[in-house]
Length: 251
Figure 1 (cartoon, rainbow, N blue to C red):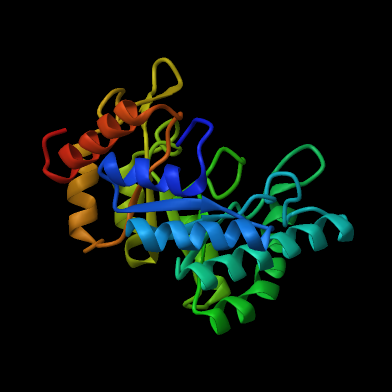
Figure 2: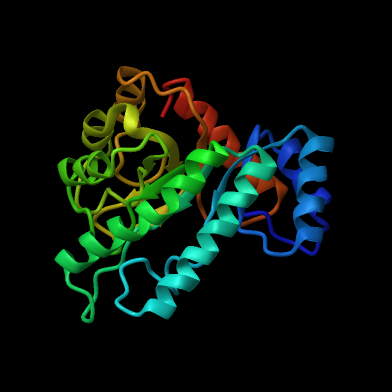
């Protein structure tokens, strides 16, 4: 979301000035870049609270191709190492992709099998793998989402719940109540159901009051991360203000 031709430290400084406490970073393969990011977080006091794994769409864990799976696992290992190094604690993972080549049943069994390969590293690193609900034609109900996590049976696998992604075919507060303490991070963005498009926080058709009450009901006290289009500092500050209104119950 932080756009412009700036250094990593300048981007972190901009986000801090715009009012943010934390930031979600992408997977970093270059050690020098990772060092710059870690130093920028230290200087600005902006917490890197999660890592968004970068290869799960291109190389899904639900693939039947061993080479694709190994690339996906390798990318996740880098993400887990980043999270440990940054003290982020969480790596976001899209667990599977259902498509013409991959059936729902195969996506379920293959992705669970491959995630189990990552659990020992996650547990040893003290990092949680957090699977996100996205438009991947997979885990389409809160009951199934919850069961999928329970079946792997590790404290290092939880949910990264996205309020906007679910609005086309469900209600965020309903999913939050069902997932409960399995939720370790939250993504927020608005969604307009009639127009079928993402919008800013507070716009669109999501009932943010019910979302806030659901988060309160489950005792959620983690990071809530805006995931919207990018923009300049004024835009980012407005998004941050909207987050504040959400917390205060004014949306």
